[in-house]
Length: 203
Length: 121
Image 1 (cartoon, rainbow over the protein chains, first blue to last red):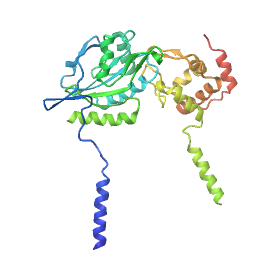
Image 2: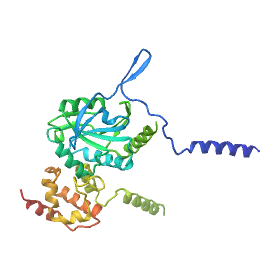
Image 3: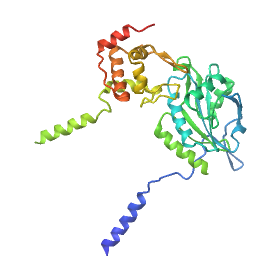
């Protein structure tokens, strides 16, 4: 009797700890927040207006009722960008056909990354521009919005290619709030990020 | 007997230590080439060529010069690598042919050096 009882207890403990999906069921809102009159106000992505590879205007209303992934890059980048783009292609394929998810890559080199150049780059790399836009615009606007995305974008003649920027991928919800980010060069981190995207699509 | 077993285990472990028999080449490749050509040599669409057997064979003789001097592609420019000497370039070349093209090449360091000396400006 004692044997049966012990086995049963052990079995229950083992089965409970063997849960293969330690998946999250919620995503925190990231960034600064203020408490105003008892309400928590989270910081959001500011108003923006850029132009994409097809000369189409891209602003906040482009992402109305959508969640999106943002990053910063430049087409002449000799360091991290190819790996980040590779991972973003993986994300593009994974969510193919999903109308609720968009992706936006901002150039930090608006001088050389003209609309035409962005278009050629998109075609060359295999980017589906229905889902994923490459945008350019005023340098100050591109650089200052990087802060909202917890990303770095600065001109630096000592940096390879001439620009310092982070390889982060940032996930933004329908209320313009950041919900997740990862190092876009690391496939394992991107796996976890993809799970966050899937979760946000359901929330 | 015990010594024999330990030696066998040790040898087995040492053999597992590297993905490729060109360990130095692999490490040089990862530090100098993989951020564009990727760790598996797959490149990036048409912007950065994949290091396939076909692509590597097409330009086989030029590869040491390409590594040293860089090359202008349609979309992007591969930068030069003036810091790499003929031994390092030889290691990289052997590694990429072995790992990505499944080909063993028979170039000596002297062959690579001669090739580099003949690079067009």
